[in-house]
Each structure stands twice: as C-alpha cells, then as structure tokens.
Image (cartoon, rainbow, N blue to C red; front, side, top):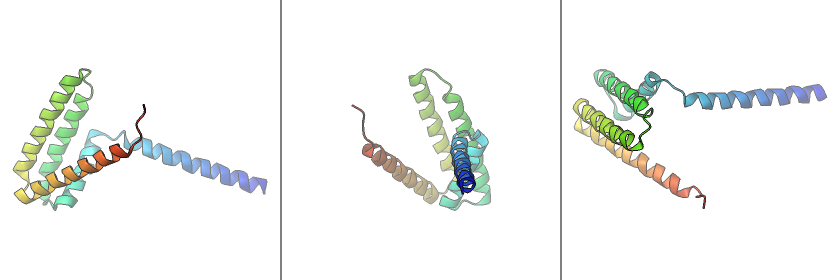
Length: 128
C-alpha cells in the first residue's frame, strides 16, 4: 500500500514538473516560432489566401525580430519610440496585403483584445 502511494505521489510530482516546464517553454519561443503562430492565428481569423499568408508570415517575422531587438535597448523612451514606429510599419505592410474587410476585422479584433486586457488589469488587486 505504501509502495502504491509512493508511486502515485512520484507520478503526480513528475506530471506537475512537466506541466511547469511546458508553460515555461512557451515564453522562450524563437522569433520564427512566434511569427509562425501569429500567422496561423491570422490566417484562420481573417481567412487569408495562401499568398496572403506567406506575405503576412514575412511581415510577422520582421516584426517579431524587430521587437526582439528593441527589447535589448536600455533607454525606455527610445524603446517606446522604436516600438511605436515598428508597429506602424507592420500595420502599413499588413494594410497593403489584406483586403479592406480583412484589415478592418483585424483592427476590431485588436481593439477587443486590448479592451479585454484593460478589464483584466482593472480586476487585479493593486499593492498599496
């Protein structure tokens, strides 16, 4: 009986460690992996053609590489300015690839996601 309990506890511990390791790996995806994930999400969400998906994939790869480079900057003001410019350039590139309807759908989804994040932040307890 003790042997069975020890086995079950060991198994539960191993499963817990595995789950923690997997969640930690999600934060360490490469630029290419993040770009591919975002492109797949956008392809599904916006109904992109194969040609559009390929172009959006390149735009996303450039964007995520630029964001990775920007995060290395120590000056917060410079980082914010470059991030803003990078996002504007990405949006201009996307606007050139997407149909007006797809672009509008993308902007609406972003606004909804931003609002959800804002609401989630408002519900968090603040340290005083």
